[in-house]
Image (cartoon, rainbow, N blue to C red):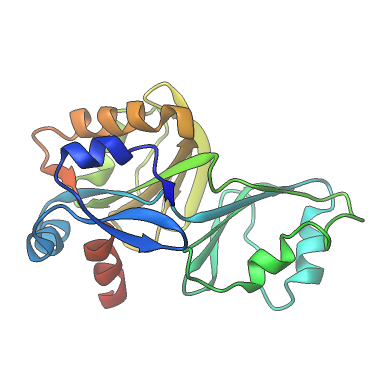
Length: 225
């Protein structure tokens, strides 16, 4: 069973576990209804490190992906697309993409990214699932919390929904996504810095209603929007 880099921290918080795709994931922290309400009225941080992640880079990455993933709209640099209900694609640069999927989501992407389909092109895929930790920050104070930790301009004009970028968050290089909900962000950082960034987010959110929330409340919230 694979573990999040925050596994021991979650244990100290009284987590209730669930299993998905061979991972132990934090389902909730004691009261699911309270967590669902908190995502609507407060601000929650959700450990999404279990998500499947692939990085595709190279000067032929876009045409190669367009050939292999027929009908999938690839995003422009700095933007995000959502080809299926459980898959996001972040256009990091003109020739660099980060694919994100739930463990129990569509397997087509896993088949494409097996390596054999990309071996003959100048496009290189790296499985990043265990390399990158991921967090969702959800709630009306999410932007205020993040803005305390980064020099990136997170105003609506500069950072609208479906925008992504790489930058420093609490002194750590991270990939930041703003998703469909006006108050929903996702961050991805190298696993070694996961606990540090998690603690920094909780500290920045002290007094702004930030608390850990499990994946079940988060998934149910997304299913209702």
